[in-house]
Image (cartoon, rainbow, N blue to C red; front, side, top):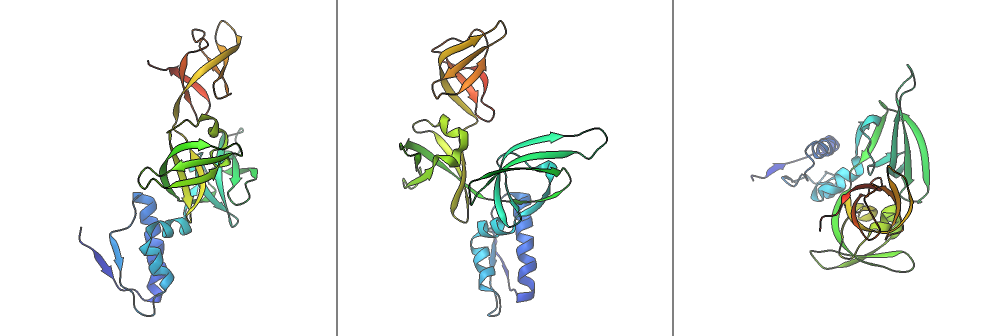
Length: 244
C-alpha cells in the first residue's frame, strides 16, 4: 500500500489527531497506513501517538449515546475509566427513556450504579485486546496466562474476569483488554462446556443443578448428573447438551 506522508505544523497536529481517532473508531483498524514527517516545531507527543496507533485511540475515545453502551465497554466519566458490567433499559410512561448501568472503576476496583438518558453523550474508550491461554490459578487468586505467540507468561488477578473466573479451564483461550499497556478486564468464551455435578431441585418444567465450577443453573428435565452441557457465560444460562 502506498504510504501517505504529511508535514504538520503545530496548528495542524491537534486536528489530525482528532481525525485519526474518528477514522479508527469508524473503520476499527489501526491507522498504520499513515506516516508523518513533522517539522522541528511539531509536537513530539503527536509523533508518538501516530507511531503507536493504539495510543491515539485510547487517549481520545469517541462520544456515543447512552443507548449504544454495551456490557464490556470501557467508558470515561469525570476523569476516571470504568468497565460496563450491566446495562438495564427502562421507559416509564411518557417519560424519557433511561438506562441503569453498573460500572467498575478500573483504577480503584469499586463498583457503582448510575442512571443516564439514552441520548446522553458518553465517552467510549477503545482498548487493545489480545488473546492469551489460561495456564493455572494460584490459591491467592493470581491467574497465570500465556501469550500463544511469544510464549511469555503474564500474571493477573482473577478479579479481571469477575464471575467468569469460575469458567476458566486448562488451555482455554481468553481475551484480555489493555489500556495504556495495563490489563483492564478479561473475558472467557461465550460458550463453555460444564459438567452437571448434582441436581438440587426439580419441577415438571425444569431442574436446578450445580455445575462442576460451583454455579447453579436451570436446565431442562432430561438433564441428569454427569451430563456435559453448554452454558452461556454472559448470563449463566443453559444452551444445550454438549455433543459427544
